Length: 305
Image 1: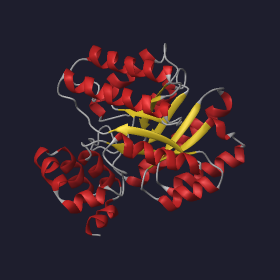
Image 2 (image 1 turned 60 degrees about the vertical axis):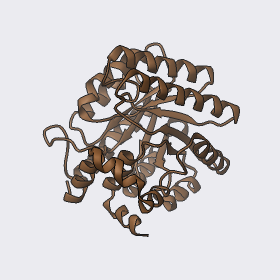
Image 3 (image 1 turned 180 degrees about the vertical axis):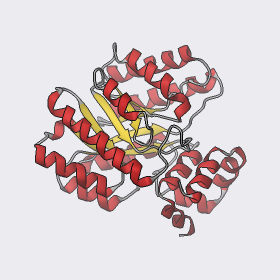
């Protein structure tokens, strides 16, 4: 793992930095490349524009590691308001949540109850909830909660990270119950005992897991693969397999973040692939933003423009 990436990931968790740097205009200008604004209206306005072009959309309210019950209830309200507005504007947007936003650090039962509320609210609006995967320390509990709730709710998906050694085993166990799985590389600083550190190794494992998911697409009716990556080599490799195996695009989609590799996003859409753009909003954007820089340290040059 590069020194720059380590420094950036450290900065994303540093309290002083995360409260000082966002006040600088040059940082605010830079983050605007990756999110259309801090408010729900900003996010949904951009969702509407993108859906008119042909993209799918996901929104996520930024924030993590809620410190008390009041904060978790505020997050639930934010997402419920989003679901109401999505329905009001006849958008196809879905939501993506972090369980630490919903109280995973505080009390498991609180987190589960909050997530149930969101799932029920989403069901009423005929829409969907993705669970983001966070740091390794939350993995077991996140999977436990997901496996419990998917038994009663079919509008929920889970995320796996290709940089974790155990993800192949997790994928195989989830395929027995989970029709919706999103694959990402992983964006947190993890110990080498649990996580691959070499970029090529992580990419190779991503392709291995993604190919396995696509093969299961053919065999398992209703299973949806979601491939979240900005790595063009991975995307081209998967599209080649999709075309060779004649996999119907109703069984998979690609995901990318708003503002990153827009040239590639346009190329994917024009190639008649399903592409969903994730749009973030909220005031607590700094940790998320720095992790985006860490994924590709070349983005640091955007701070200077």
